[in-house]
Image (cartoon, rainbow, N blue to C red; front, side, top):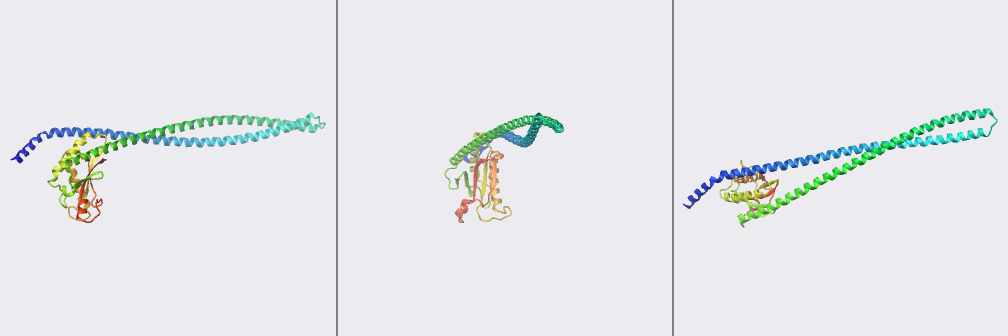
Amino acid sequence: MPVAAGRASRRGSLNYWPGFVDALTTLLLSIIFLLSIFILGQFFLAREISGRDSVLDRLNRQIAELTDLLALERSGRRDMETQVSSLQSTLQASANERSRLQALIDAGSSAEVRAGAASAALEAEKALTARALSTVDLLNQQIAAMRRQLAALEEALAASENRDRESQARIADLGSRLNVALAQRVQELARYRSDFFGRLRQILGQRPDVRIVGDRFVFQSEVLFSAGQATLKPEAGPELDRIAAVILDLSKEIPPDIPWVLRVDGHTDARPISSSQFPSNWALSAARAISVVQALAARGIPPQRLVAAGFGEFQPLDLGTTDEAYSRNRRIELKLTER
């Protein structure tokens, strides 16, 4: 009679299930909405960083073009200066020759032919000097124009370098802020993982077949499954109920922008298995992990927060070949981690 009364009480409590499902659905939709906002933020941040990279590449190309043009202008200026020096040397030589001829004329040479020749040479030198001076003026104007262009190019190059430094500073700032945000999320998840282990330890007690190894909660396979099978035993139901209750309570406390998941890992011992249902230990370990995931999902855990993984015999805790070692290696591990 007490058993019948307990069952009737449980059937009466099921009347609250639709309201619980509605509340859980609303919470799930809110989490999905906040995750969508977080993903969009990550997308726009990635696009901003990509845009910064493209701008930086364009600036680098412009700087390279300006540098090449500057080198070309400097080379042309050196050629112009060489020509001016040559023309100045020619002009000096013409001036010396004109002075010499003028000295001959002033000396009053009596030879008219020589004086006429000297006068003709002097006129020719004057014409040559005038052309040289005109060329020098033209070259000076060209040099002045090239200097103005060179100054403009140097100013543009300095402005491009300043923009480049500003872009790099903004990119570095974005990267540092992103790293800080990720570190904060990792710390928060570690705190909730510690809380998760603490609550599981309280409800499961000090059982020899349930223990903590590193950052994982480990169940011996015999607690949940029969030998060589992936179907949960009936007596595993209460254990999974308590675990699901802890996860549901903890999920309400974890901020929605932390992409956490509960990973369920299946492991077997090293003894080979080959059957029509499970051709390998890999298949058996994966099937067991999936069975646990499906059971947790049936108890209200959001499926997008669950991950099933099968490791077969390739991650042993004990390398021995005794029955005790094989028993330790046959296990199901629960790990609260980041997606």
